[in-house]
Length: 585
Image 1 (cartoon, helix red, strand yellow):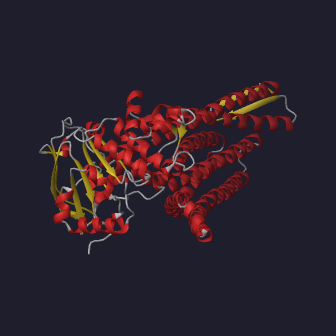
Image 2 (cartoon, helix red, strand yellow):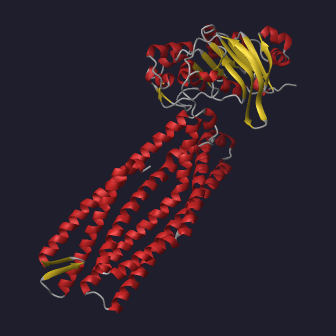
């Protein structure tokens, strides 16, 4: 993180070293001024190594004030540099993480637990920024510590050498606590990830928890996650505080011992002894900061490991953007395609079919048959484990991903909006003209309702239920898919939140698209299959039938059974059945 900032880091070290030298000079000068005043002298004598100065008391006081002002200016610069570096690192890490996440394949992103990425973007990066600040503290405190000790050596080599050697020994002695702190920080990092997931889930389940009256258990679940994070944080902070407090006490013992040695050796004069005491006490403060910052860096390492491990994992999964341009669709085919989420448990196996360009194809089947997984394979969100996905006889992965994303669209069974205008939600971060947005809204039969909103297409909406209805959300997302004029359109239960009138309107719109694009419709309502040229039946992870409705009515057991249930159990005029709850017999 700091490798690209060698210049500001070097400036920080240089300024800190200069600040330490000035601080040592101020302390030595003040000790001599105090001794001169106690002895009622008129001149201050400064004897530090080769330096031997004589100056009037008033001049010495003015010099001390000037050096204090200079040190104050240096401290402002020393404070500004780490804050500037940390702010830049925070922004760059968040951009880097989000860029890696956005480019990653869906197969990798979908493995993240709920709340995982949000925690990475917030607390884990904040911990990384804390590491930057602590590295800056190590550089600054270390430079000042060395400057002060060097100055003390010039006054009393024995005492300063004892303090320096003891400080180094203390660093080594605290290694076990450093390891304990790192282990505690690793547990804390995982606990915060788990807590973030629990928070995200709790927000999503808030409505159901209220309806089912389970708020007590709901609160208890969250309280356990908070307690786990609290305990892990306590252990991490405890080791940090122990290191800081014990180090300070130990260094005082060392200073007292060094001064006692000077006293019994009858070495030095009163002014020099006072200067040594002041300088070493101040050096001990920087030594404490140095040890504390070093320990804090060690504790942050698990957060950095998790953060950069996630960035590497996202980057490694990013699909290759290179490839051929997507041509006009003539055929789409699967050849013996299989896919598993877990080894040895195939969701789809030996899937083979071919679709002509411009066809509208329905996909039906019982719960767990693999319909949604098939839609993700069609969208290239996932790659087959075995077999081949072909477009015009060429492997689909040979086409450039950017071009693919422009020409392939999707409407999921859970329509999602973001906080922004209706037009922005339909545009969805693409360069699409307003006229094309309105054309798509008309095709999705939502244009008239948008016009009635307070600000029309400029009305700000979001995912919350009080912004737009479920049916409106679904039709806005359908307009989003149609706005880019795709060549391939995949709809996963795209009408499940619509009333019969809206569904009929959308069916009419989809029927009007026949021939202009290839459409795959995962349908749980048989009424939607009326506009399909052919219907693919998925049972048990494989294709059990593929043909027109008339052909399925004659040959496919699953379709005949569902159709008979519609005829037997639905009111007249209601040509729909929820096949999701059915399983083959």
